[in-house]
Length: 197
Image (cartoon, rainbow, N blue to C red; front, top):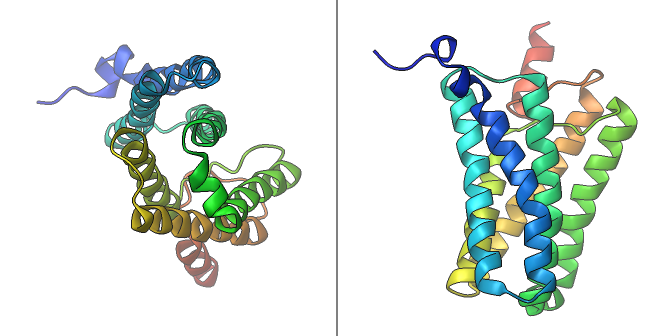
């Protein structure tokens, strides 16, 4: 018989603890980037990104999803994203300067989606769609490989393309969903549910 969330108070808090650790890593990562310590930055960033995968998996596996957990996860992801963008600018600036239009489109759509969500719902969207998870994983793999091995153009284009598509889907969800919801599977499922009603 496996461990259940009801019997383990530690397990119940583990997803939020991992999100909290990711938040705590942000100022350390910022200091490492400012101090030009790329190796330490890279490995701490990879560890922080792995906590994102772990907290989501644990929350889903043991049915520990909560509104506060989704919010904490979104805030941790948002701040970590700002730091890895800065880290790429410091250590691998050519990626951004060589692909300024794509990077600008991805960053602009991401910020636009967050701004629209704040205006519409008073909070980050926290949709956690399937596409956003796929995009985040592709981006995480690209960033990890970039810092540890080097730059691969096809990985960049795949990750940035999925990121742009994910932001466009989330903007469409903001137009469709009148009330805030967390952990929405995607636009297709929302539209299908509306048709059934």
